[in-house]
Image (cartoon, rainbow, N blue to C red; front, side):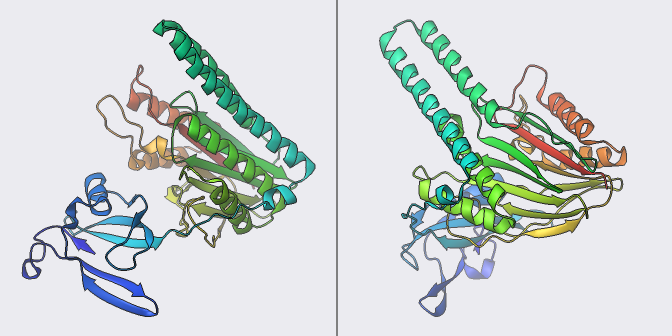
Length: 387
């Protein structure tokens, strides 16, 4: 717990009690250095929200490779007075697992091969772009070539997303992905297996071609695991191990998936560091709670799922951070508060998924301005249980 300088008058200018485990003993000490310039303190103070630090070596207590999760704390007046941190050791995951390949059906293997071919084509596009820049001196021709080839990558990404909605008398669905750049790190997917509707949404921690490649791998692993695992925690554990074994660029993905029983209306869901979903009803909109699971691809983790009973006409709304962090020309964010207000109005007006997403898109367009485009991907899905 690191307090802002001077908060505790009787403790000195800097006061930061620190508790850590040494073997089997719990120890407590005071940090004896100026922590105000460290990333784990400075970032949440500036952003006013929880932050993950980059991996580092802890030279003050455990001497292990760590990452820190920092949360700003406020007093009753709303002023940030301290940063609460939790240090977690980063485990070395060097063993590449072959589970996904051994457990995949022939259809899943074919899908995986198509995704790999798509990744190779993207790499070819990038290589050709670099070669073109060396070959041609005309900057306008080089840019035109790059734009043309990236458009191919964009089309490939669109091909990876589902293009039709499943038909079921108890289900209504709408999903939308608007790319902030030519290639995206967001994705969504869904499957109807008998009377079980499975859906997911994810956001890779990067942008550009690298995020596109990571997104393709994550989406492929997701679909393969969902077809072979009945329980969401098993799906999340399999995906996490696959991404850890392939993660050489320190990327991770926030991910949320749900399994809706269309006979009973029981929704099982699991959240890996993603934004909390909203349950939209005629009474308004409220967030569904989520276990504190880490994003996929960071470290070994035992993922936990939750469940909620949906009533007829209840709608689940899931989205990526590009929605609430969309910045207009004045650099003002759309914010989750505005999203919650529009979802509340949608619930009271009885909006179905298509109308609900149209409502949010109109609000975003009004916020961004006609000629201004968001820098991040805008992804949203709405699922209505018709009972």
